[in-house]
Length: 159
Image 1 (cartoon, rainbow, N blue to C red):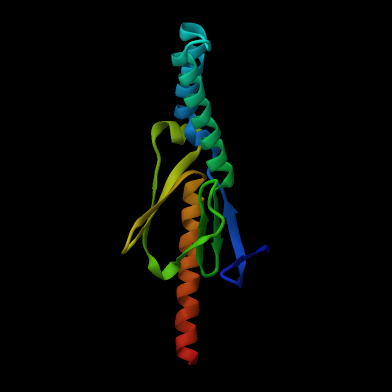
Image 2 (spheres, rainbow, N blue to C red; image 1 turned 180 degrees about the vertical axis):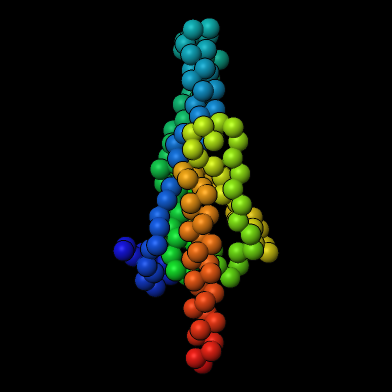
């Protein structure tokens, strides 16, 4: 079992997962079409073609970087989230704050076997987009949430 350090404390990792790159299939299709359009219709010698090419390329690179640098970690205490290419620290979502967990899948997401995991709290909703096997992740989070509740109640009885 791996460990992660968050706020100078050591935490045991139960499961770690990332968004799947296939979640952004529509963005890749539109960007590829834009790049093709920039080369064939406008050419890269014109300002329009160069603008389309650079914006599409920037979107693809940013999307790939954000997928590969986003990480979700399930621990015994809660869920740690690090999203995007510019974040360095994990943000913690404790099990006591979680009210509801649901899975949303569109038609294409069902075909790709990915989905969005929506976690509701009192303050906000956190959406984990493009998760592979979202129903299994939901079950794992619910299992860890109930285990954490059992540990808290046992500790209260002891004290």
